[in-house]
Image (tube, rainbow, N blue to C red):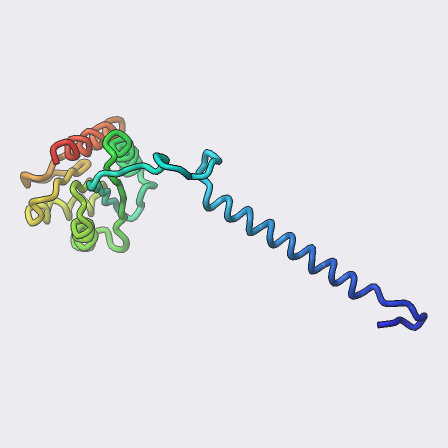
Length: 181
């Protein structure tokens, strides 16, 4: 294009500059996102043999109330489970009970952990503990531990509900279950 004075318009060149700037910015953002997603917190990529953690075929699962790991007892139990995982190489996971906080509402969540082949289930919170108390006898191949509350099934251990003891009690329960399996 030519302007009235006979010179070429600078608009196409400006557009190309803007398009190039947008492309470079998008590439930079994409690179940053990929680095955040694929680099561990230490900043070095996971590569090479021996870098990946080898886990046992043993799952320890935490069943919590709707607060999940935000509850102080559940957070302490989770910390104990993670410590046991580091010591034994057992896999750990948690599942919060959504919706109504009753034993009846918690039972399907408990059953799903059993179906996932959790070898030991730790229950924290009134609804999860009640569900374990009611259902543990049906799942004789699974070991259960409840934080607080009470249960009388032979495969259930009652752990202290004192905040200062939960982490250690859960760590010992999971470690003991792993070693005896």
